[in-house]
Amino acid sequence: MTSTAEPTLESLRTQLAGAVLTAGDPGYDTARSVWNGEIDRHPAIVVRPAGAADVAAALTYAREAALDVSVRGGGHNFGGAAVVDGGLCLDLSSLQDITVDPVSRTARVGGGATWAQLDAATQEHALAVPGGTVSHTGVGGLTLGGGFGWLTGKHGLSCDNVLSAEVVTADGQILRASADEHPDLFWALRGGGGNFGVVTEFEFRLHPVGPIVHLAMFFWSLEDGAAALRQAREVLETLPGEMGVLVAGLNAPPAPFVPEAHHFQPGYALLIAGFEGEEHHAEAIRGARSGPAPLFEFVSPIPYVELQKLIDDAAPWGILGYEKAAFADGFTDEVIDVITEFLPRKTSPMSIMPVFSMHGAFTEPDDDATAFGGARRKSLAVNIAAIAPEPELHAADRAWVREFWAALVPHASNSAGYVNFMNEYEEDRVRTSYGAAKYDRLARIKAQYDPRNVFHHNANIPPAK
Image (cartoon, rainbow, N blue to C red; front, side):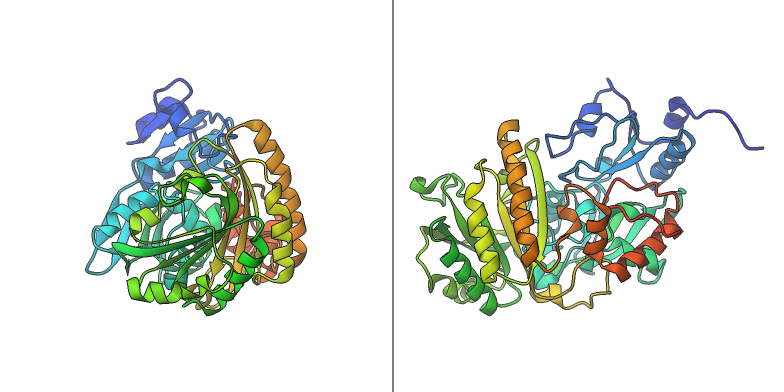
């Protein structure tokens, strides 16, 4: 006989090996916090699972109690998708175990680990997984949406390097998804976001990297912006595909490698990371010096783990944030005109426009090899981020982001951009990001694994009817 008793918190606590937190409990406020300080939501219940079985039990409880569900990995999403008012938040920060096998060059990584933790563990063996560019980002959220950073040109996206995943589905099944097991789910997890289940463990392919790599940074003034971006365009045409490249519109940081006279000065930076030794890097960056003279340059060996933390200070925990993004085919004259018109209009010195060069190994897989949205061709991912310490600056730059993005869209190859760079999740933008065929395939897989759309606090793909 099926029980009709209402589920209780006490019954949930007795089922779990992990923790159940409610308002007032020690750790509750930490568990509901996210990177974006603008987000202040209060789940009715936070579950910190001890493993996949706890996740399954919590999902069953949420269904019986009619509670909305959110999943918190690293909590770094701009829109605060990790937490939901009045619902049940699965805080995976309790799942941070990392096991590295240097012989097989693989790593098993808990669903709540951060890239700083994963980089530290793998660099003990001079190995790495392609990750992001801010080290306190969660491994899970970044990977499920795609994941690109310094190593993308050399080893592809984070999701390209997933070998398998332990997944808890909406109905509480615990599955292992890989090329051989549940291959449809495995395909969807690699770029389709958090739509299909809770990933409690990833298995990654590792690559030899570091521990010392090489970095060059060239910085130009706002006045030289057009010339600097045209120079960056020429550099990107000839740079070896395995190099890591970031072009950014930002204020120069007050870092030791920045001359004091240029601290906080707005301008444009070209950063080039090399992983093949000093001579290879020196030859590769030669072209960056053939154009307009930068205000300063910095060329140095750097530990890979420090490269991964290079822009952490530009995105501190608790700051106010808002972003939009689009893909462009390159630094065309039209794109350069838009950038140089709008970048000087930002108000907050922390607001930033990072432009990621998608090249090299990123372009090698077939477009349909994974669920990642966007064509696998050489392109630029242009991110426009309002980052501010106070509401007034943030409000001004939120408007700046929207106006900047609207001016960029007519010259972009994909107006919706990258799902990991979405602050809001309008259905038309999500659909455009994946393209009609891939979106429809994802919707069919969603209908199989999450027909009730339990996992909808994300770049949501509703189940096909």
